[in-house]
Image (cartoon, rainbow, N blue to C red; front, top):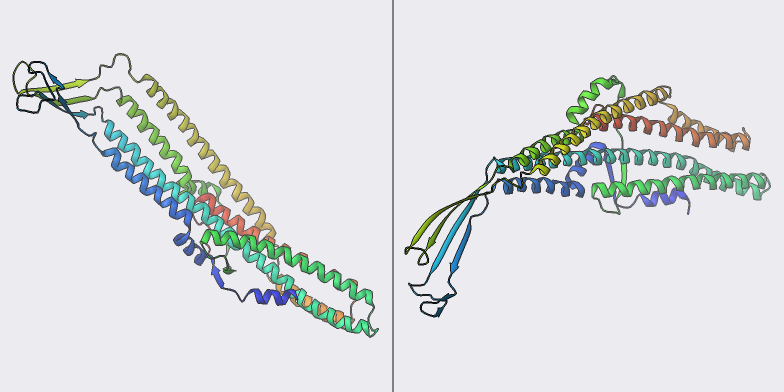
Length: 411
């Protein structure tokens, strides 16, 4: 079976053609990682409800096992002794409010972590879709030369059998075809791996055959401005905001540790039916810790160290953010210099010339060596063209990812 026939049969399976916006729409709706991450937000919000809850009151009942006056065990009559106590813990120093504040910060962090995960996965999605597009373009460029080469070999085999063409020329063409088929196979297998990763991100059925359509995008609409992008990144990068939120959270934790040094009050009431100096004895109870031995110095010190540690992490995150932005801007400047030097009509021109060269070779207007030389040049140059276009997209998307917003939107 010829490769071109196989490629055509392969496209008879369930097909799905996607643009980048369509892929993102499916991703936001069906990606299982995002579905799981959304539950973390709900869990964190539930923790806020729990942090606001008051401690439960404590109920105690005391029953006399043995009445030594009447020699009775576990008396249940009206003369039996009963003691009932109810206690309620009253937290002082605003502990409950401080725990609630910590839980609220954790809920905000969970939400920011969701958007960070979404940002990372969306960038991976875009990169995979663009990579698959260019792999498919490379595959098609190979098919564009394999198909006429297959037909050419069939004709030359007949001519060789008639003695009109040297057999060595047919053998050389077959070797050229074999090399082209191997190149096509390598690209197809790489495209299969990329397609599998895309199906996992989009939660698609494994038998779907994906085709990616890319829009045209004008990268020159935005001037490279790293200083502005750093400010934008500080506003839109959720991973950076998480570090800032954690700094606020450890400040709340320090406040809670200091509040732990304030003794809580336990209020209660007691009823003793027969055991006190009078029948039906009622008492009001008040209890609290005396902060003599444990003043929570260790907890307060640990919280202060954690605060200093988190401040270092915020500074480090800010430095990393600036480096990321300037690095992405430098890469964009580098690739645009190469891309601007490309002829946008090169691919179409090369396909037309390849077709013309093949016809010229059939008419014996050029030699086998000249045909092979242009054949190899066609494959190499088209591959470099696609790689350069992919590198440009990767540089633009790196800016979007690093800043945390679409500086270079792709419609």
